Length: 199
Image (cartoon, helix red, strand yellow):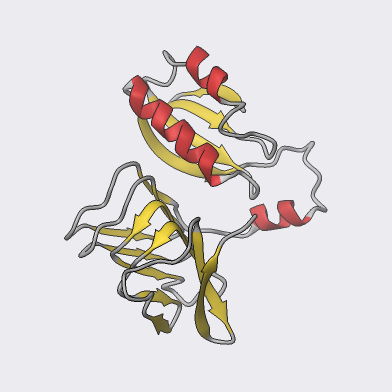
C-alpha cells in the first residue's frame, strides 16, 4: 500500500499483495493523515477485506472515505496485460457507502456500488455494474441495471428477497443462508446463480 497527497485529500493506493494483516501497521502509523478526505485506488486484484479494514481505519481516525477509484496506469505500466485492458474499459462512477444502508434507503450508481456494512430489508441498491456488500444483504439488489450481464452481486451473506442482474430476476431464498462464508450471484445462461464465493 502506498500513500500520497492530493489537493482533495489523501490517496491510499493498494497493491495485489496487500492483506488486512500487513497493512495494519501502516494504517496505524498514518492515522493522522487518515483524519482527512481519503480516496482508495485499487487494482482488479485488491481483496475486499483489505478495503473493509482500511475503511474502518479511516472512520476510526475521524476521516471520510470519499471514493474508490481504479488504478491509473502510468507510462511505465505494461499495456499488454489483461489487467491493463480491464482498467482501460470505460466505467461509470463507483459509489461507496461507508455505513449500513437502513430500511427505506436507496443507493444508485452509474458504475459499481460498494457498501461497507449491511443492507437492511426495505433498502434498495441499484448499480450499472457490480454490487459489493461487506456485510449482510437483506434488501433488494439490482446489478447490471443498464444491461451489463457480466455484473455480479457479492456479500458476506445474501438474504435478499429479490436479486436482479441485468434483465433477470431471482429470489435469494427463504432468509436462511446455508453458506458459512461470502456468497456471489451471477448470470449463467440467463439465469441468476447464487453460490459460495471462493478466491
